[in-house]
Length: 158
Image (cartoon, rainbow, N blue to C red; front, side, top):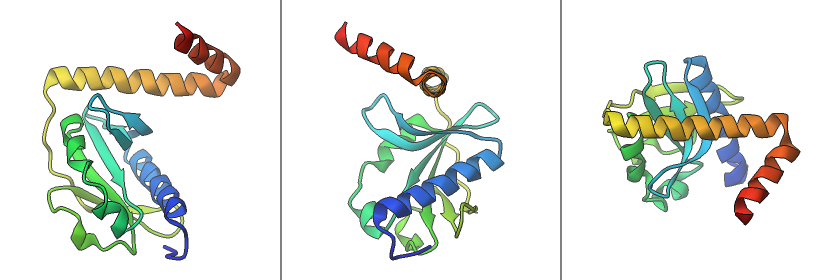
């Protein structure tokens, strides 16, 4: 990937490739998912078996080294992956996480499968409700942006 791009542009490219990676595997990815612990997963994907994969997108080594909150995502997924570009120093990433590498364009390859650490059934159910509500709300906002904005404003006032 182009090292001359600013980190935000690199992040966007890696995120797009990771989203496509998910879709091609039959996963249902949603970006920027707020978690109950106050963190935000870059991508949370519902897997065909009903499990969840969290994908943490990193644009560069500095992005990874300055962000120590990623272990807190494990409590809200069955599998944890990092998505990086081809220039990222992969030796920095923990071996007990999956690894998705974005190439030129919007393609990505799985270099390492994430080990499974199954969620408790009650947590999975709560996470599924959160995921579904967020995804449905975003879909509704796409079809009726003005109505969704009015609803959000009304909820903030109450």
